[in-house]
Amino acid sequence: MRLGGPILKDCPDPESWIAALRKADYSAAYCPVTADAGDDVVRAYADAARKADLVIAEVGAWSNPLSPNEDERRAALEKCRTQLALADRIGAFCCVNISGSRGEQWDGHHADNLTSDTFDMIVEVVRGIVDEVKPTRTFYTLETMPWMYPDSAESYLRLIEAIDRPRFAVHFDPVNLVNSPARYYSTGELIRHFIVTLGPHIKSCHAKDVLLRPGFITHLDEVRPGLGNLDYGAFLREFDKLGSDIPVMLEHLSTEEEYGSAAEYVRSVAQKEGVTIR
Image (tube, rainbow, N blue to C red; front, side):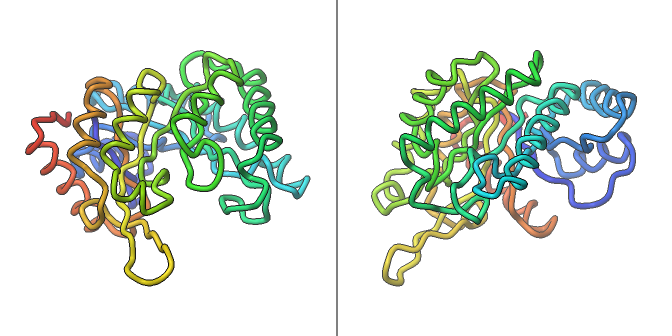
């Protein structure tokens, strides 16, 4: 597998971007350019990554295409199409977004999120995005989430079958699936089941950790890898079965030092488990 993460400093050209990735000892990267970049710029970064044996894991399309606000929904759909097209241009493994929320907070919980009507809306939205862009090199994916579809291996498989598009695939975030004490104390089995069920469809993955706080009632926090309860041994062993190029991407940390500590922890567990990180 490959490990990657954000580059926090400004990299104005492919050479400085590659140098920063090398300094962090990453072999996978987030997309380094925006959708308004010209084809020559996109090509330059893609060529630099290929020559350095680096992969571009994902392009984010973070927005709410299910928003109850019509203007926000239209803008989100346009962003999804634009970012998917960028992912295809640069040869990223996937373009990733959440399915969206029926509430005001773009990534928040809502009473209607886990209903059959919303499931049908997601199917229609994803089909429309993929059908309009017609990607040939990348995939549109939805990040697993705790309070919206897909919130389990089963709901993701149902979406794959209902959307029925070869260029729709899977983005795996195991921490986002941990939404109860039952899942918190069985993360190894949760991960194994997800990968057994959806492994061939998985294109990229986020690496973080989760901590159940002692206060009443249930309160789960995202934390840096190594500071929570996620079974990283099971995570890396199972994920490694998907191939040597599959990217595992660190996220949501504030400093280079934090990313360095997170990467060091992931690599230490990989070494213990006999898993090779390129």
